[in-house]
Image (tube, rainbow, N blue to C red):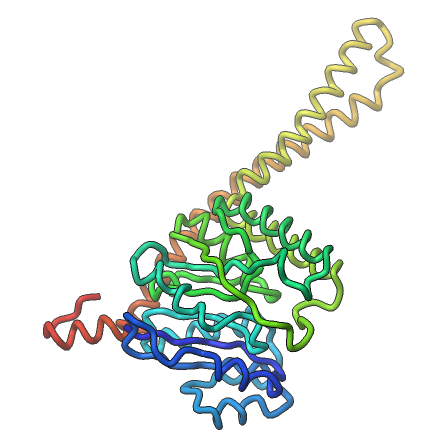
Length: 329
Protein backbone atom coordinates (compact mmCIF):
# COMPACT_ATOMS: atom_id res chain seq x y z
CA UNK A 1 0.00 0.00 0.00
CA UNK A 2 1.54 3.28 -1.16
CA UNK A 3 0.65 6.69 0.27
CA UNK A 4 1.68 9.93 -1.44
CA UNK A 5 1.26 13.17 0.49
CA UNK A 6 0.87 16.16 -1.81
CA UNK A 7 1.32 19.82 -0.91
CA UNK A 8 0.26 22.70 -3.19
CA UNK A 9 2.83 25.51 -2.95
CA UNK A 10 3.00 29.13 -4.00
CA UNK A 11 5.94 31.08 -2.53
CA UNK A 12 6.12 28.80 0.50
CA UNK A 13 9.91 28.80 1.09
CA UNK A 14 9.52 30.16 4.63
CA UNK A 15 7.05 27.56 5.90
CA UNK A 16 7.46 24.53 3.62
CA UNK A 17 10.29 22.91 5.56
CA UNK A 18 8.30 23.20 8.79
CA UNK A 19 5.35 21.42 7.13
CA UNK A 20 7.58 18.74 5.57
CA UNK A 21 9.39 18.00 8.85
CA UNK A 22 6.05 17.30 10.52
CA UNK A 23 4.92 14.73 7.94
CA UNK A 24 4.87 11.07 9.05
CA UNK A 25 7.62 8.72 7.93
CA UNK A 26 5.77 5.54 8.91
CA UNK A 27 2.10 4.59 9.31
CA UNK A 28 0.81 1.13 10.20
CA UNK A 29 -0.83 -0.49 7.18
CA UNK A 30 1.21 1.62 4.72
CA UNK A 31 4.24 0.07 3.02
CA UNK A 32 5.59 3.19 1.28
CA UNK A 33 5.17 6.91 2.05
CA UNK A 34 6.31 9.42 -0.57
CA UNK A 35 6.02 13.19 -0.83
CA UNK A 36 5.03 15.50 -3.68
CA UNK A 37 4.77 19.26 -4.01
CA UNK A 38 2.96 21.28 -6.66
CA UNK A 39 5.00 24.40 -7.38
CA UNK A 40 2.34 26.81 -8.63
CA UNK A 41 4.65 29.34 -10.27
CA UNK A 42 6.56 30.30 -7.10
CA UNK A 43 8.94 33.25 -7.38
CA UNK A 44 11.01 32.31 -4.32
CA UNK A 45 13.15 29.22 -3.63
CA UNK A 46 10.26 26.89 -2.76
CA UNK A 47 11.53 24.22 -5.18
CA UNK A 48 15.04 24.40 -3.76
CA UNK A 49 13.72 23.90 -0.23
CA UNK A 50 11.71 20.88 -1.38
CA UNK A 51 14.66 19.31 -3.21
CA UNK A 52 17.04 19.86 -0.30
CA UNK A 53 14.54 18.24 2.04
CA UNK A 54 14.22 15.19 -0.22
CA UNK A 55 10.73 15.48 -1.71
CA UNK A 56 10.18 12.57 -4.12
CA UNK A 57 8.20 14.40 -6.82
CA UNK A 58 7.84 18.03 -7.91
CA UNK A 59 5.12 19.24 -10.28
CA UNK A 60 6.17 22.58 -11.77
CA UNK A 61 4.01 25.35 -13.22
CA UNK A 62 5.87 28.26 -14.83
CA UNK A 63 3.01 30.63 -14.00
CA UNK A 64 0.52 30.64 -11.17
CA UNK A 65 -2.48 28.52 -12.19
CA UNK A 66 -4.49 28.65 -8.99
CA UNK A 67 -5.33 26.17 -6.26
CA UNK A 68 -7.82 24.08 -8.24
CA UNK A 69 -5.49 23.51 -11.22
CA UNK A 70 -2.59 22.75 -8.91
CA UNK A 71 -4.63 20.26 -6.92
CA UNK A 72 -5.66 18.31 -10.01
CA UNK A 73 -2.10 18.34 -11.38
CA UNK A 74 -0.94 16.87 -8.09
CA UNK A 75 -3.63 14.17 -8.17
CA UNK A 76 -2.59 13.27 -11.71
CA UNK A 77 1.08 12.98 -10.69
CA UNK A 78 0.25 10.91 -7.61
CA UNK A 79 -1.82 8.46 -9.65
CA UNK A 80 0.88 8.16 -12.31
CA UNK A 81 3.39 7.32 -9.59
CA UNK A 82 1.30 4.48 -8.23
CA UNK A 83 -0.41 6.02 -5.18
CA UNK A 84 -3.05 3.83 -3.55
CA UNK A 85 -3.98 6.66 -1.17
CA UNK A 86 -3.43 10.38 -1.70
CA UNK A 87 -3.39 12.90 1.14
CA UNK A 88 -3.61 16.63 0.44
CA UNK A 89 -2.31 19.08 3.04
CA UNK A 90 -1.10 22.69 3.18
CA UNK A 91 2.41 24.14 3.01
CA UNK A 92 1.74 26.57 5.87
CA UNK A 93 1.54 23.69 8.37
CA UNK A 94 -2.06 24.64 9.18
CA UNK A 95 -3.04 21.02 9.81
CA UNK A 96 -1.52 18.71 12.42
CA UNK A 97 0.37 16.15 10.34
CA UNK A 98 0.08 13.51 13.07
CA UNK A 99 -3.61 13.26 12.14
CA UNK A 100 -2.77 11.91 8.66
CA UNK A 101 -2.85 8.43 10.18
CA UNK A 102 -6.37 9.11 11.47
CA UNK A 103 -7.37 10.61 8.12
CA UNK A 104 -6.55 7.51 6.07
CA UNK A 105 -8.06 4.92 8.42
CA UNK A 106 -11.57 4.95 6.83
CA UNK A 107 -9.92 4.27 3.46
CA UNK A 108 -7.80 1.44 4.85
CA UNK A 109 -10.97 -0.05 6.38
CA UNK A 110 -12.78 0.30 2.99
CA UNK A 111 -15.39 2.56 4.60
CA UNK A 112 -14.84 5.62 2.41
CA UNK A 113 -13.16 6.81 -0.75
CA UNK A 114 -12.88 10.44 0.37
CA UNK A 115 -12.10 11.55 3.92
CA UNK A 116 -12.17 15.20 5.01
CA UNK A 117 -10.51 16.54 8.12
CA UNK A 118 -12.90 18.46 10.34
CA UNK A 119 -11.12 21.41 11.95
CA UNK A 120 -12.15 22.73 15.40
CA UNK A 121 -13.43 25.94 13.81
CA UNK A 122 -15.00 27.43 16.94
CA UNK A 123 -11.79 26.84 18.93
CA UNK A 124 -9.42 28.22 16.27
CA UNK A 125 -8.10 31.48 17.70
CA UNK A 126 -6.96 33.11 14.46
CA UNK A 127 -10.45 32.73 12.89
CA UNK A 128 -12.53 35.87 13.39
CA UNK A 129 -16.14 35.47 14.64
CA UNK A 130 -17.39 36.40 11.16
CA UNK A 131 -15.16 33.83 9.48
CA UNK A 132 -16.35 31.12 11.88
CA UNK A 133 -19.98 31.89 11.09
CA UNK A 134 -19.29 31.95 7.35
CA UNK A 135 -17.41 28.64 7.55
CA UNK A 136 -20.38 27.02 9.28
CA UNK A 137 -22.87 28.56 6.86
CA UNK A 138 -20.85 27.55 3.79
CA UNK A 139 -20.55 23.99 5.06
CA UNK A 140 -24.31 23.87 5.67
CA UNK A 141 -24.97 24.99 2.08
CA UNK A 142 -22.57 22.35 0.74
CA UNK A 143 -24.26 19.65 2.86
CA UNK A 144 -27.63 20.57 1.35
CA UNK A 145 -26.26 20.69 -2.19
CA UNK A 146 -24.26 17.47 -1.90
CA UNK A 147 -26.52 15.45 0.43
CA UNK A 148 -23.52 14.62 2.59
CA UNK A 149 -22.88 15.28 6.28
CA UNK A 150 -19.49 17.01 5.89
CA UNK A 151 -19.19 19.54 8.76
CA UNK A 152 -16.12 21.39 7.40
CA UNK A 153 -16.44 21.70 3.63
CA UNK A 154 -13.60 24.23 3.03
CA UNK A 155 -11.03 22.01 4.77
CA UNK A 156 -8.13 21.15 2.46
CA UNK A 157 -6.85 18.35 4.70
CA UNK A 158 -8.14 15.32 2.79
CA UNK A 159 -7.46 11.75 1.81
CA UNK A 160 -8.57 9.96 -1.37
CA UNK A 161 -8.50 6.34 -2.40
CA UNK A 162 -7.02 5.61 -5.82
CA UNK A 163 -10.41 4.79 -7.33
CA UNK A 164 -12.05 7.96 -5.99
CA UNK A 165 -9.13 10.13 -7.12
CA UNK A 166 -9.51 8.80 -10.66
CA UNK A 167 -13.14 9.96 -10.69
CA UNK A 168 -12.39 13.54 -9.62
CA UNK A 169 -13.12 16.39 -12.03
CA UNK A 170 -12.65 20.03 -11.06
CA UNK A 171 -14.11 22.58 -13.47
CA UNK A 172 -13.73 25.90 -11.64
CA UNK A 173 -10.36 27.61 -11.24
CA UNK A 174 -10.93 28.94 -7.72
CA UNK A 175 -10.82 25.98 -5.36
CA UNK A 176 -11.40 22.23 -5.43
CA UNK A 177 -12.75 21.83 -1.89
CA UNK A 178 -16.44 22.63 -2.43
CA UNK A 179 -16.84 21.25 -5.93
CA UNK A 180 -15.38 17.83 -5.13
CA UNK A 181 -17.77 17.36 -2.18
CA UNK A 182 -20.86 18.17 -4.26
CA UNK A 183 -19.51 15.95 -7.03
CA UNK A 184 -18.85 13.06 -4.64
CA UNK A 185 -22.19 13.37 -2.89
CA UNK A 186 -24.22 13.58 -6.10
CA UNK A 187 -22.30 10.62 -7.56
CA UNK A 188 -23.00 8.65 -4.37
CA UNK A 189 -19.33 8.20 -3.46
CA UNK A 190 -18.56 7.25 0.14
CA UNK A 191 -17.51 10.43 1.96
CA UNK A 192 -16.51 10.61 5.64
CA UNK A 193 -15.18 13.23 8.03
CA UNK A 194 -12.82 12.79 10.96
CA UNK A 195 -11.96 15.41 13.61
CA UNK A 196 -8.43 16.75 13.24
CA UNK A 197 -6.22 19.28 15.02
CA UNK A 198 -4.73 22.48 13.66
CA UNK A 199 -1.49 24.30 14.39
CA UNK A 200 -0.93 28.00 15.20
CA UNK A 201 -1.09 30.28 12.17
CA UNK A 202 2.27 30.89 10.43
CA UNK A 203 0.91 33.28 7.79
CA UNK A 204 -2.39 34.74 6.60
CA UNK A 205 -4.54 32.84 4.14
CA UNK A 206 -3.81 33.54 0.47
CA UNK A 207 -7.00 32.01 -0.88
CA UNK A 208 -8.98 35.25 -0.70
CA UNK A 209 -8.25 38.95 -0.29
CA UNK A 210 -11.56 39.90 1.33
CA UNK A 211 -14.37 38.12 3.13
CA UNK A 212 -16.88 39.37 0.55
CA UNK A 213 -14.76 37.99 -2.29
CA UNK A 214 -14.46 34.64 -0.54
CA UNK A 215 -18.21 34.35 0.04
CA UNK A 216 -19.05 35.42 -3.53
CA UNK A 217 -16.66 32.95 -5.15
CA UNK A 218 -17.70 30.13 -2.82
CA UNK A 219 -21.41 30.64 -3.48
CA UNK A 220 -20.86 30.81 -7.24
CA UNK A 221 -18.84 27.60 -7.09
CA UNK A 222 -21.56 25.79 -5.13
CA UNK A 223 -24.37 27.00 -7.42
CA UNK A 224 -22.45 26.17 -10.59
CA UNK A 225 -21.53 22.70 -9.36
CA UNK A 226 -25.06 21.97 -8.17
CA UNK A 227 -26.44 23.03 -11.55
CA UNK A 228 -24.04 20.63 -13.26
CA UNK A 229 -25.35 17.68 -11.28
CA UNK A 230 -29.00 18.69 -10.76
CA UNK A 231 -29.90 20.89 -13.75
CA UNK A 232 -33.50 19.70 -14.02
CA UNK A 233 -34.21 20.54 -10.37
CA UNK A 234 -32.73 24.03 -10.77
CA UNK A 235 -34.55 24.88 -13.99
CA UNK A 236 -37.78 23.29 -12.75
CA UNK A 237 -37.72 25.66 -9.78
CA UNK A 238 -37.11 28.63 -12.08
CA UNK A 239 -39.81 27.49 -14.51
CA UNK A 240 -42.32 26.94 -11.71
CA UNK A 241 -41.71 30.42 -10.32
CA UNK A 242 -42.26 32.18 -13.64
CA UNK A 243 -45.08 29.91 -14.82
CA UNK A 244 -46.91 30.11 -11.48
CA UNK A 245 -46.62 33.90 -11.38
CA UNK A 246 -47.99 34.06 -14.92
CA UNK A 247 -50.96 31.89 -14.01
CA UNK A 248 -51.74 34.06 -10.97
CA UNK A 249 -51.67 37.25 -13.06
CA UNK A 250 -53.69 35.58 -15.80
CA UNK A 251 -56.31 34.50 -13.30
CA UNK A 252 -56.40 38.04 -11.92
CA UNK A 253 -57.03 39.40 -15.42
CA UNK A 254 -59.85 36.91 -16.05
CA UNK A 255 -61.46 37.94 -12.76
CA UNK A 256 -61.51 41.62 -13.78
CA UNK A 257 -62.61 40.73 -17.32
CA UNK A 258 -65.57 38.82 -15.90
CA UNK A 259 -66.50 41.96 -13.97
CA UNK A 260 -66.31 43.95 -17.18
CA UNK A 261 -63.12 45.76 -16.19
CA UNK A 262 -60.72 43.82 -18.39
CA UNK A 263 -59.72 46.80 -20.55
CA UNK A 264 -58.11 48.49 -17.56
CA UNK A 265 -55.88 45.48 -16.79
CA UNK A 266 -54.44 44.61 -20.20
CA UNK A 267 -50.93 45.09 -18.78
CA UNK A 268 -51.57 42.15 -16.44
CA UNK A 269 -52.48 39.98 -19.44
CA UNK A 270 -49.29 40.99 -21.26
CA UNK A 271 -47.09 40.35 -18.22
CA UNK A 272 -48.88 37.06 -17.56
CA UNK A 273 -48.21 35.89 -21.12
CA UNK A 274 -44.55 36.84 -20.87
CA UNK A 275 -44.10 35.02 -17.55
CA UNK A 276 -45.79 31.87 -18.86
CA UNK A 277 -43.59 31.90 -21.96
CA UNK A 278 -40.43 32.39 -19.87
CA UNK A 279 -41.52 29.58 -17.53
CA UNK A 280 -42.18 27.24 -20.45
CA UNK A 281 -38.82 28.04 -22.05
CA UNK A 282 -37.05 27.51 -18.71
CA UNK A 283 -38.66 24.09 -18.44
CA UNK A 284 -37.50 23.18 -21.95
CA UNK A 285 -33.98 24.37 -21.13
CA UNK A 286 -34.09 22.24 -17.98
CA UNK A 287 -34.98 19.14 -20.01
CA UNK A 288 -32.13 19.81 -22.44
CA UNK A 289 -29.72 20.43 -19.54
CA UNK A 290 -30.81 17.14 -17.98
CA UNK A 291 -30.02 15.31 -21.22
CA UNK A 292 -26.60 17.01 -21.31
CA UNK A 293 -26.06 16.02 -17.68
CA UNK A 294 -26.80 12.40 -18.59
CA UNK A 295 -24.25 12.57 -21.39
CA UNK A 296 -21.73 14.10 -18.97
CA UNK A 297 -22.14 11.07 -16.68
CA UNK A 298 -21.39 8.76 -19.59
CA UNK A 299 -18.33 10.84 -20.51
CA UNK A 300 -17.11 10.74 -16.90
CA UNK A 301 -17.42 6.96 -16.83
CA UNK A 302 -15.48 6.72 -20.10
CA UNK A 303 -12.89 9.10 -18.64
CA UNK A 304 -12.59 6.91 -15.55
CA UNK A 305 -12.00 3.79 -17.65
CA UNK A 306 -9.41 5.64 -19.76
CA UNK A 307 -7.66 6.84 -16.61
CA UNK A 308 -7.50 3.27 -15.33
CA UNK A 309 -5.77 2.22 -18.53
CA UNK A 310 -3.54 5.29 -18.61
CA UNK A 311 -2.43 5.28 -14.98
CA UNK A 312 -2.22 1.52 -14.66
CA UNK A 313 -2.63 -0.38 -11.40
CA UNK A 314 -1.50 1.20 -8.15
CA UNK A 315 1.35 0.06 -5.93
CA UNK A 316 -0.80 -2.42 -4.02
CA UNK A 317 -2.29 -3.91 -7.20
CA UNK A 318 1.18 -4.20 -8.72
CA UNK A 319 2.38 -6.05 -5.66
CA UNK A 320 -0.55 -8.47 -5.79
CA UNK A 321 0.02 -8.95 -9.51
CA UNK A 322 3.67 -9.79 -8.89
CA UNK A 323 2.73 -12.30 -6.19
CA UNK A 324 -0.07 -13.97 -8.16
CA UNK A 325 1.39 -13.67 -11.64
CA UNK A 326 -1.73 -12.01 -13.05
CA UNK A 327 -3.40 -8.60 -13.13
CA UNK A 328 -5.99 -8.05 -10.41
CA UNK A 329 -7.18 -4.57 -11.33
